[in-house]
Image (cartoon, rainbow, N blue to C red; front, side, top):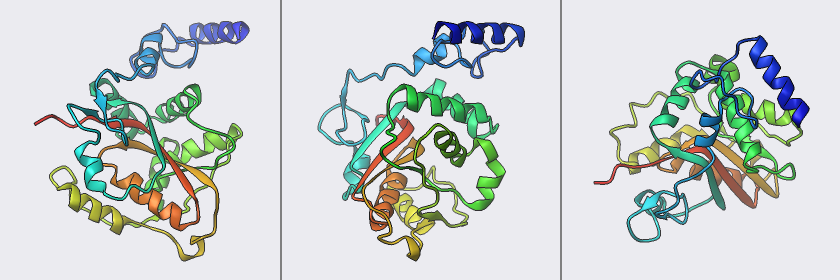
Length: 242
């Protein structure tokens, strides 16, 4: 490990590399393309407050957040996330989605490994995108995360269920019920995959907002035959208190 860290230090110095997030040159030992401060920002979740038993959203009282209460039937069996979706992390998603920075994909890959959120005994899939978006985003898409995982010995499965090419109006001002309806019209399970699989599976997405995308995806995966669906996102949105 010491030799590896030394080689990374030499490489970063010679090539004049800097943190892909903030530009700092004080690289972390755990992930050699981000700085120590950026790495530390992913280390701890603020769990001082009461949190929803299903999704981890902070609560003032009770056991479940409004989003999970509206979901009614929860089809996934577990949910974990790396960090809450606050200001600093919104910038990281912007770099990933707006600027197509594939290094953010590599960052998520390393964080999933570093936090022991995955198992080589359980197949892994991601929330699918349309063919057009998959090609457009290239290495910045979730499908590339599957490539990185497969390359490192994980068992991956692609496109068990699929996404239709449908244009929806902005989701920002829609009610949660309308979002749920949109999601159900957006994803489908091909007939050839009904009851084709068995056992457990891990489903990965970028952000948990209302939970409708992960929950409906989990429903489709269970229709595909999986007995347990474990869900993971990079971030969990925090709703403004009213």
